Length: 279
Length: 247
Image (cartoon, rainbow over all chains, first blue to last red; front, side):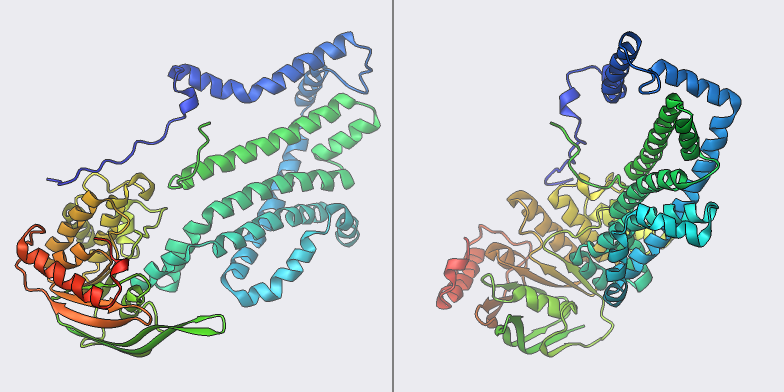
């Protein structure tokens, strides 16, 4: 038998919640993030109902809910949401794929870095609004200019983070790879890729956020469908409630995609040993 | 299997200055020997080990194995496990875990290093001693003819260290692997070694090689053990390096 018995530590529990029974912990986990929005909504509703504020300036939450309901009934909401989602997704996929490839290429070779990185860093700082007119001039008002703008937004976060992740691999583990005669593919698959993964996932999260932001710019610049168009159209007719519906949809869309990636992170990075926040 | 080490010069570049690390190192290692290399910090013993392992190729001299394909294993001071892999994946690494033969060997090794039940654990869930045992199993899976160990137990507590020294001894006895262990722990060097290599600092060179003929398993409290220990200590004092040794 063992001469010394060594037992692995049990996983850390959230100490702050430890005195509260399990069900309450679950409930609090759901309620906590909703608390502030809920209070704001109630104050907002009361303010709109009893204050002297015009509905074109600030519609109440109830007005917004009604507008949403009407938009769903007429089928407009689904139609606009669908086209916006397709734009955001295709732009994101193109931009993120290009960013990932560029990040890998630059991460692996200092020569590629010297050639490519300065140019990309220059392009990175050019704002959307500055290039959007050019994209429209070159590609017209169609889908191509919009998707390209979104792709531009999604490209850089994942490029920068993939590059960073690859360069952040612990050099000490390369000694191990050398001792065990890893070939190039094994080095990439077993060492570099898993090590860079946290950064790549962070890049994906930021790229998704950037894709949503770029979508707004693209659709507000000029389009005949999509959530951005719906908002522009409503603004012209002073239907402020519909503008709010658009804002909320963008917020929700961003949150849903972000949560999805975070779930992915939780699963793929379950090996990580980092501070989980116990204070 | 025997190794002939002959290093005329190994230096590091420190800015414009060239700092000599190893000079005129001559060391012959026979098959099945347990060589322990001991010396003050900064004497280049870890560098010597890396050169033998083939991790450092920037030196003047030769390291000859009578069989060039000799498989070398290396245990580092830190465990150097891949944090994203489980214990069994860490042992297998670039070898297929699904292969039946390898699977069987891993199960055997997990048994030898007493880690049954932890095959699916991640490194973050292991103690320092357990992680170092995984590193030992990982090296043994490749069936090395030579195992090089760079102060492998120095970061562990006294009990775990003693336990792992015994584990290592058992492996050496049963598998007939040639061991080269670098340490700054005098007791460890005398407890395990069949040949003790004492090194000197600035620049690093071998001051003396002492064969240890004490029978195994060795008793630390035994008079002959203490006598050997004293002999090594005297050698150090002669080198005026005794300050570096904790006893």
